[in-house]
Amino acid sequence: MSIKSRVPVSQFGELLGYAPGNVAVYSSDYDTADETIYPNRSAYRSYLDGIYMGYKWQCVEFARRWMYLNHGYIFDDVAMAYDIFELRSVRDINNQTRLPLQAFRNGAKHHPVVGSLLIWEEGGEFEETGHVAVVVEVHQDKIRLAEQNVAHQLWPQDQQWCRELKAKVTKEGDYWIECSYSDATILGWMTQTEHSEFSEPTPEISTDLFAIKAQYATDYGQATKSWLNIANDDEAAYVEMMHGHKLTSVNADQHHYFTISKTAQQTIEHASNELHGLFMHATDYVLQHPELLKKFNLPDAVLNKIRQSWDNRLNQLITSRFDFALTPAGLKVYEYNCDSASCYMESGKVQGKWAKHFGVKTGIDAGHDLFKDLVRAWRKSEVNGLVHILQDDEPEEHYHALFMKEAIEAAGFECKVIIGLTDLHWDAAGNIVDADGEKLSYVWKTWSWETALDQIRLECEADQSQSDDFEPHWQSGKTPRLVDVLLRKNVMVFEPLWTLIPSNKAILPVLWSLFPNHPFLLNTAFDLNDELLQTGYVVKPIVGRCGANIQLVDEQQHVIEKTTGHFASQEQIYQQLFALPKVADYFVQICSFTAAGKYAGAGVRVDKSMIINGHSDCMALRISDDSYYSS
Image (cartoon, rainbow, N blue to C red; front, side):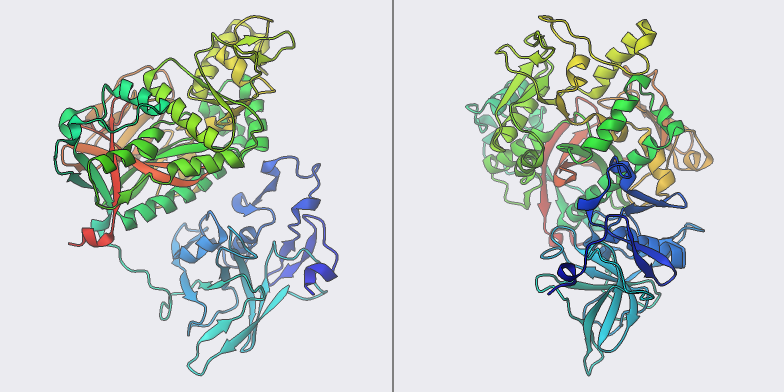
């Protein structure tokens, strides 16, 4: 009989006991959480001395808090507890330096010590997440742990541990720990130490593995033949927009494509998952700090609605896109497009069909899982009925909408595409209905939220009474505006309103302040500083589309490239210059797509300009074995 079945469970947040160092351990029984104490998602975030520890009261939160209180350092944010086993350093909070963190696999000759972190693999009792516990006692025949989010019972009085696992030391000195759950696996333990003997190797990764290579498919006349199935609505719309069966608009490039190594792809996947978590943390931080929120230039009338969206719909993101620069110097993120991102069909369908038609056998399609992951994301959503897709009357938006319609229908939902708003009207009950009289309850849009905000700004300027809390106006029989549809209380919109925060480039200086020198981030500030002057910098409007109104300035303060557009009046941020790699004739940007907040595939956009813009082409991206990149 397990401890869980013998001892009463304590209510969520109740103190269970104290680990060494007088570190409190709390119940994580979410079923008993008091909504008056934890009214929203933000209430579940744990901070200590203004430093984010994790979600109350999960295993990662306790491990990070224990480290901080006892040693003054923390490990980086991770998507899942098992990801801790891949970390190789911790951050000393006092001086922002890095200290080595060694990983020892279960059975290692380097035994765990008090303060080591014991890590479980994903699966079984710890399905999807894995688990982490703090080692508080080490013996030849057993090991004792302190942890959260396993059992939720009070600890015996004066006892500083909650669980004991059997251990065994072999004649050779190998230390083995037995897991008490037959369906779970212990990966090993993490110890902050300089001594790396017997630790998991951290091989030096060749910079060659982060090079993007240009490739050419042998020309057998494939470009003269049709290869997309125009019987499918999305493919027909794509062919019409592209004026033919092609992935890139440049006729001379129809046989060209790019490859990256498997190691590079794995790094992009890891970065996408980790960065999603960092952007979500920064979003919560901004919403809790009004002085930062002001920098996002959002109408006061929607701020409460954004907070409500964040509290109620944090986990309802369907998809998003990271823009990366991948070079032998590393992988850096430029920005996160959480709202109305593009290039899904090109990466999730067209590049795969292109490779088959052109006979490309090198590597695998970088977007081969994207469609099925989108389907899975829709199935996990809270949709329970007809989904309306709203799009502007633009060719690119149309095939994009039809591609998403296919994913929604594959998830088991009925779906309609609405072009423009003229087929919508208010009914007598104040609902928005389509031309068939069907009520809009679930909406996915290609329009950006900023388009709706512009309508709010104009209305608030004309009527100051709207400035505190905007509400749609309805009049039976009339056509609603975009803002009326998207902010209607009985309409659930994807992507949620809160995506305005991580999609706004004002989030980038916040991220850098919260996670300074993070390996995937670029130094970014609201004001130009000496560090940026020394490295060169990029000037970006906090809200913009398609690479508009961007300037690239080198370390000699020469403007090396700039674009114009409609966003010159927006506030700006300054980001460290980290140029895209030039591969053959093009500057190449990696686009990483997520589904439900997790990596789902990748593609590339290319241009002769250093700034990717609305006219930049997509080309096929393939993932090759590392051996292909050996010098």
